Image (cartoon, rainbow, N blue to C red; front, side, top):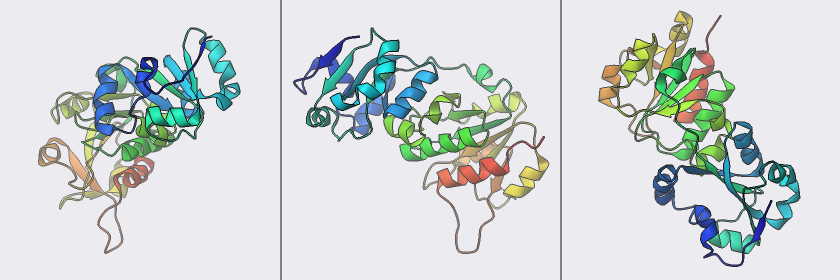
Length: 269
C-alpha cells in the first residue's frame, strides 16, 4: 500500500474530507458524488464487513498500527496521513475516533427486492435530524426491523452523523429512498403490508392493541420532528397508532418512540 503524508490543507487529493461540518454542502455533495464518510475505526470496519468499498483512508499517524490489517486488504487504496492539527484544518473538527474513510456508496436496492421476505418495515417521513435518523436505524437493527424506507426529503442515512450515531448499523439494515411521497406507500400495501402511522390522532389505536393483532406484515410510518405526520400521509395509511402515556406528556422524541414501537410490534410467532 502507499502512505501519503500530508503537508497542506489545500492538498486536492483529500477533497473528499474537506468541510465535513458543512451539513448543507455534504448532504448535497456526497450522494451526487456516490460517496459517504465512515468516521471511527469501528464504523469503518463495519462498513467494510458489509461489503462497502473504500475510496481512501484518512488518519493521524498514531492510528496506523490499529488498521494495518485493513490496509493490507486494500493495497491499492491510498492512505492519507497527517498531524492532528492539519486533519482538523481539513475537516473542520478534531478527529478523536481514530481513522476516517471515504467510501463508495453501494448501489440502491430495488424496492421489490428490499421487501421480499420482510415482515416489519419502518418508513421515515421527512425526519431531518441526522442524529434521529441514526438512532432509529440502531433501534431497527436491534429490534428486528427488516428494512427502512425514507421519504424524498428525509435526512441521509449515510451522512456522517447518522452513520456514527447508528454505530454502523445503517450498513446492516437494508434501506431505500422513495421517490414519490406518499404515493409509494401503495407499493407496501400491494405487497400485503398493513401501513400504520405512529401518530396521536383522535382515532389512533393503542400500541398494545395493534401488537395483539400481530399483523403478518406491518409498515410503521414515523413522522418528522415537530410538525409530525403530514395530512396527505395520514390519509394514505390504513390506521394510526399511539403509545399510551401518562397524563401531561403528549409525545416522545421520534427516535425514542421508534424503539418502543419496534419492540412492541415485533412479530409474534
